Length: 106
Image 1 (cartoon, rainbow, N blue to C red):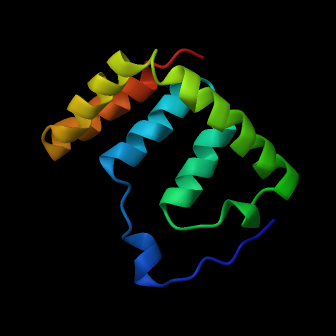
Image 2 (cartoon, rainbow, N blue to C red):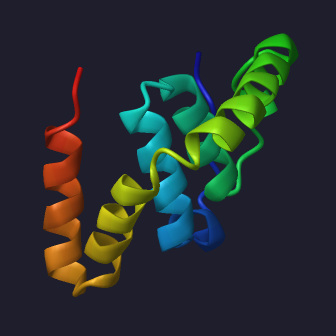
């Protein structure tokens, strides 16, 4: 499949906030890769329904609304670590986040 990506400046310069990055990292560390992809698409301004079927999207929304409520109480420590790495200096934060991604359990 080929998708036409607009060359407008608004799409290329939109950054993900630390809170949004935290949500994506949590989904990845929990092994919810499809949900992480949906979050990334949402956060950068794309409609996930342009890339995945409605049925799949609905299932992901349903499953992850239940997971997010139960996992929030157990992931406070990992969220604190991510938040501290994101809020530190920009160069150092990037390397810390990359190291955290490299150290994820597969």
